[in-house]
Image (cartoon, rainbow, N blue to C red):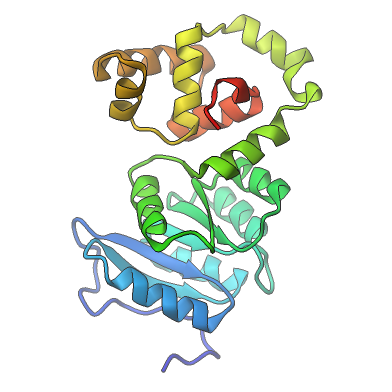
Length: 242
């Protein structure tokens, strides 16, 4: 039995060092029963390895400093530092781990703030287990995970006139995107991979790559997460199938 008086971290029985092909995961949640159940569910997957657990925000930061985690599953509501504060601290420290918010909260304002602070996915606790597995793999591969309901809500938060006018409109004029490029940006924001985008809009995967190269250059973004956040900030909700 784990001693709840100490930081909840441990070495996997498989190996004490990162193993090729394994996604190393840290679970952060203040409910012991939830952590235990989630750890057992994740252990059923051959490519997942839970390398640590935390029950509050301070323990999350301690574990993330010590563990080479690929993915952090982070609750928003925890004692001490809350999830958003943890995200801010990890962002400031240059943490390269991918972070998925795993929460029972449906506060869309919190989701927007989490995306701004660098999380790569948002999964509600009522989500089906298979979708949680998929979200972990997608985020680990560099994609963004937002289900259609959450995407719609986040997009609406950014779609107010104050966010799509003025200086932002001038920015769009300086770096105009074609209709096709806007469509691709919207699909990236939904989490589609290049191959899936190609199939969806009936062009080759290489053409998608070429478009993305041009889009990155026009917008001055460096990765797909920044591109998705651009889509949210610019209110590309009309191009998303939500």
